[in-house]
Length: 305
Image 1 (cartoon, rainbow, N blue to C red):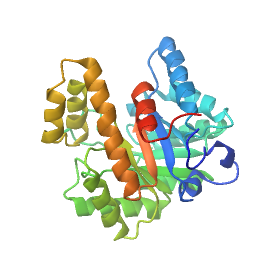
Image 2 (image 1 turned 180 degrees about the vertical axis):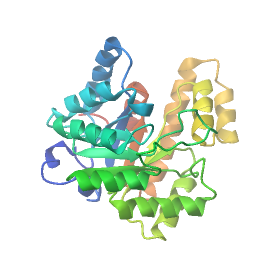
Image 3 (image 1 turned 90 degrees about the vertical axis):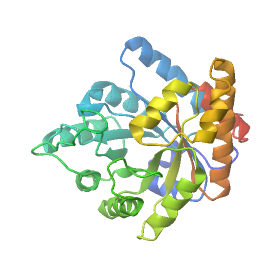
């Protein structure tokens, strides 16, 4: 069991997730994605069981473009919601969806016992660099989706934040304004895209606060386990893979065990720095694997009992 804070599951019936994250206790949470096969889904539940010992504040589950993983997403978050000690956070995007379709998905989440939703515009279906096309009866921006979900009931709504700027933003100042606008629309907390420099997170929090954004902003960490994979993810997300860090991994790139160990070391270094500067917790992009995340948490003194 971790030493600070507590799982949000027991609190969820009394307080919103946003309120839980605002208490001052450090939050530790994890992101998963719905696998494509039944075997993959069974493996995912083993990952959830492995991570459950860390008493996570939330477990987020992604939502495929255009609702491509809708059924599995609903099934997985419903299963997590059925666990008294766990709190699911269901992702929802605007991609290719009308207002009625969004309403139907939110109703499914609610019926499954889900009370927290991460509202995202979503990536253009054509990939990075392609134009974003709004559904003719849908939403153009995440703040519109936030406002719509808030109008449907008592949901705790989270949003995305980008320490290095959204790929489509004109500048970092605009990003801070957009984050504050999401809060004004009804968001209670934010989770950042992964990054590798704590100064980027520090600047984001400072700039957002300058525009009245006071909600908790959880920094996202992605422990590196595969150098080519992280370079691809960085290119897709717009996140920078710093040259000095790339050089450290280049020295061990042909040794998978060494890459894994260095990935854990780097993530633990970053996590420790973020916590020392006052971050409300850490959110791990697990890629549906528990080992690296568990090792990082152990290095930070957050191991299971």
